[in-house]
Length: 195
Ligand SMILES: C[S@@+](CC[C@H](N)C(=O)[O-])C[C@H]1O[C@@H](n2cnc3c(N)ncnc32)[C@H](O)[C@@H]1O
Image (tube, rainbow, N blue to C red; front, side, top):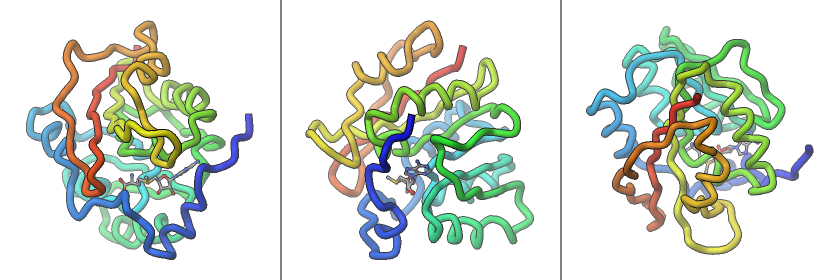
């Protein structure tokens, strides 16, 4: 299925219209690192943009793959990562067409899902499942906007439970505390294990 992109992401980067960017590392990322849920492994960061978590992970010993379709964001991540002799690669690609050369142990989705048109979510969720090895972990930041339209599109927990059903994904018993986003919105961190 071909679904039109929700936005012209490259133009947004070029115009500096990047209200989704954080000045530092996501509190949820820091929490997962501190409590030992997120440990060095081969990890995919879809729609990684210019976020700082890929470098933090690479410097901590993760084998990082970033995929994004915005040329200038990819160039920025490459400039930051690829000359540092850390284990990292940055690919310019549409995630709805891209395939992994081998399954990953983890995926870190920091507001990538909410950037995709909801019509593409089932396809994207299918791909996330395929990109992860059995037992692999999806570290997700589901954007909470509680309003219509987007991007970012509201990722209600009921919609997420339908998209990541219990037969294919193990959900935590309790949801974690939400993290604030500089835009005034919040993100719901969720750790899902791929069955
Ligand atoms: C809301 S931004 C989040 C960026 C980054 N994760 C962060 O936290 O700063 C969404 C990102 O997804 C990328 N993106 C959107 N649709 C995509 C697609 N179909 N394939 C690859 N990347 C995509 C955009 O270029 C953008 O960098």
